[in-house]
Length: 98
Image 1 (cartoon, rainbow, N blue to C red):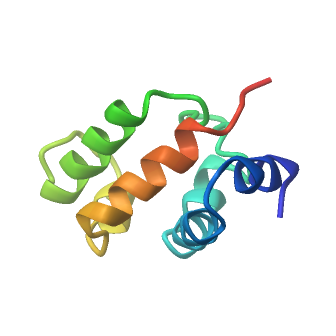
Image 2 (cartoon, rainbow, N blue to C red; image 1 turned 90 degrees about the vertical axis):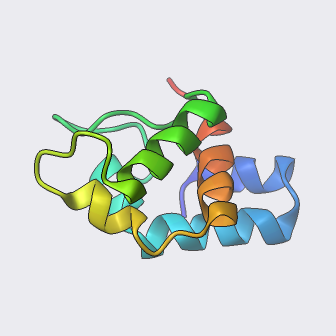
């Protein structure tokens, strides 16, 4: 686990932090956006974005109303509940950027 995740865990309720990391790992956020969600190549940075923006994007991907060239985000968002989207958005928003 990255130092950013450990820092988030120190600032957040331990159960929420563990749930957020588990969701990010299970839904492949880390595989595409990188271990600290800083993005890579054509994959955008999630870390440090506004939580409202991140949640809205996740909800739009889930509803398939947001542009998604390869369908990866829409597929990843399908199993997420509303509380999951909030947890992931808060997690990514609280990660710092270089």
